[in-house]
Figure (cartoon, rainbow, N blue to C red):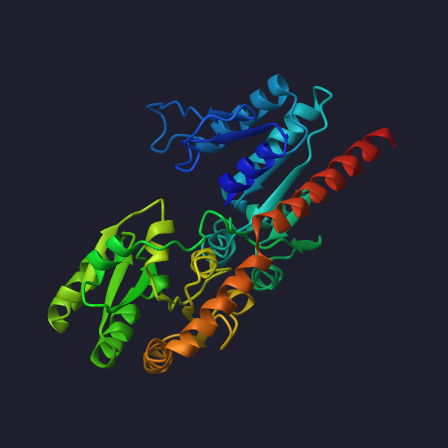
Length: 365
């Protein structure tokens, strides 16, 4: 999301500098307004773990001073908010006013952030941010619940490029995946426990028994060996295809009929939104921020976490009723349009202006 935001801002004439330890995958083309700065982390025999945070802060300082940055927008509280705070303090000693905005995405709060080892730093760095945003109301409330946050957290939703994910007719691709006209179910994740990928397999087993169908699994991660064994034990391998990590999901979305996301928790559910933009209904749990994206009976269906039978029943009802499927496809696209990148990016621009003006005013006083 940070990469796509930066690219959209560059398209609107802003000068955007990416500072990170590795070039983002989606930052794959030249743009006159985009600069990339790789954080170099020296290794020392003194340290078992190289001091990445110090290297990141130093790189931030270097870019601020040599490229006249107006502000920093950091994504994830750990470690970026704390490193931005340090960089801000360093450049202030040299007369530069550079506020920073922290965007919370989910795991920095719900997983890593709640670890008592990091909680004091997370709390401090969020409170020291000049502005804080969260990608859903649920994540905003989770942050207030677990941390003593003294500032307002503004919700700016994740976004999707509707044109990029516009559904296309790809008959040859569809034929290769579902040669006999089967329905195509899709799951995309990093195959971690929180994604509950075994539930995807259990849902598909029930759907397959009533509706001829295929399952595409996009991604990779620690649970993949377990999932492969499940498919073998259930005798469904011929109808399940593991396609690994895919950065360009547009074509896969375009041949899919149902997106399955039974996660234990999602702060927002960006992959579900991308599916909706491709007119693919979403079958999901009702966890976290998912109900803010997936609307029951309109864009797809929600069920309690772990309720495989309910999810399977919803999937069967939808995939066996072409009229209902067409209606929900339309509802999914309409919902995705609310999160169009052209609607969300101006919210960030307005925030940047407010934060910058406030910082400059505070110095002048």
